[in-house]
Every structure is written in structure tokens, then in C-alpha cells.
Length: 296
Image: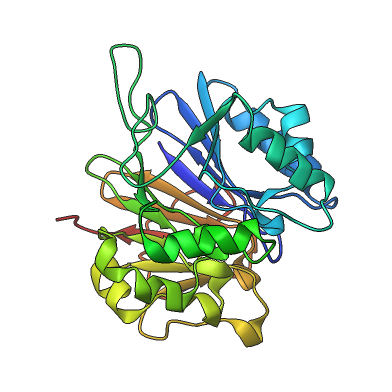
């Protein structure tokens, strides 16, 4: 069954998608010394039977590509997806130098709103689509152009983040937003076609500075919002929504089965009250419950 995993990596992001098709996707990485061996070992193991693998960079910020040189050394990144950008850093870390090598190399595929590629979102007679679609950026948008210029001048790259979805036929939709900031999201609302998503990974690790505007939430209609590991004082808790807090839950796995999503975490004491108990085995960590939904 397809599954999505988000690792507990502190104030940063590391995800992978184990697709139901012959695809495997890593989204961002923040590989600190204490976990990088274990995380990359797992990525290698879980992708071993997949013919197509890709790395998607939501945006070039340190806590989203840290350790990418280590990952590439152990599991060669053969397909590197990122937005076209000329982001600069001073000083440059080894990981940023490696990001630039991938960004500017022949393994790079530029992503933007509505882009298509085998086998990201196109199928053929050989294998199926991965179910990944890019909803943002619109490279003609004036706010996006301003954000690109800011990143090129050494400023924050947060607002050159992508919006991406992973959808499963007759199943859930997952949405990612990188580190988009609230004001930027408000500015581009009329220029982005959001889709209803059962599981949403909150922008900017769940920070208040990346709070999803109400107008976006009205379109997304999330069943679960996953809050990253920003410091508790900086978190937006989305009080009117069901949330999973990685500060307490640790690693979180979403295993899909039709219109059900079984949820597991790495912390044995973590629990929520909005999931049903279907007595799943602790296959991917500690089972905390199942989301049942009907997708329109």
C-alpha cells in the first residue's frame, strides 16, 4: 500500500513517498549527524524495488537540503526536481554547494505550475504515474519574481517554495507548501488553484509566520494538519482543525488503503482523539488510529 513518511529531524523537513507504482520520491532533507545514517539506510531499503526515484526540493533553504551531499553519495540522485533559481548564500556550506551542483546539472528538471513529466504525473505502457502535481509557482507572477530576486541577492528563499500534491486514485491527497509565508500566500491567492487535501503539511514547520490563511484553508478543507518541529512558542496550532504535532509524535507515517489512512508515529506515548481505532498492527511505528473519509 502507498505510504508517506515525515521524519522527526528538528527544525527542518525530510519526507519520502513509497508509491503504489514503480516510483519512489524524497521531498527535502535535513540530515543531521545523529540521524542521517538511519534515515538514509531506510530510504535505500524502502526504494530498493523501485525503478524510478526522484528528489524534490521545495526550496533552497539549509534545513531543506542539509546533508544532500551525504544522501547523494550513498543513493545517487538521478532525478533532481527544483524551481529555476539563482539563490546565493554567504557563506556557502558543503550542502549548498552540492545543491547548486544538482540545480545546475544535467539531472535537474525544472518544476512549475502545471508541469508534466514521465513518470511524475504521466503514465505509459511501462509504468504508472507517481501522482505528483505542482500547483505553484506561476513563474509570471509578480510576487514570485520579487521572491526570486530576493533569494538571488542572498535573502530568504522561503517564498520561492513550491506547492505540490500527491494524490492516490480513489484515495487521499497530500499537500506540501515548503516555507511559504502568510503574507505571500495571501498575495497569490487569486493566482493559485488549490485542491481539497485530506493531509496538509503546514508551511514553515508549523510556524505562525507560515500560517495558512483562512482563504486557503477554506479551499483545502484538511482532515489533518501536520505541524513540524518549530519551537512551541512559534507554532500556529490551528485550533479549529485536527492536528498531529511532530514535536510530540516524532516520525509520522500515513499508510493509505482506499478511503482510509492508517497513521503511525515513533513516540509510544503519543495519541489523538479524532482517529478511529481499527486495531492495526504496529507495522510502521506505533499505530495511533485511522482516518476514514469520502473524497468528492
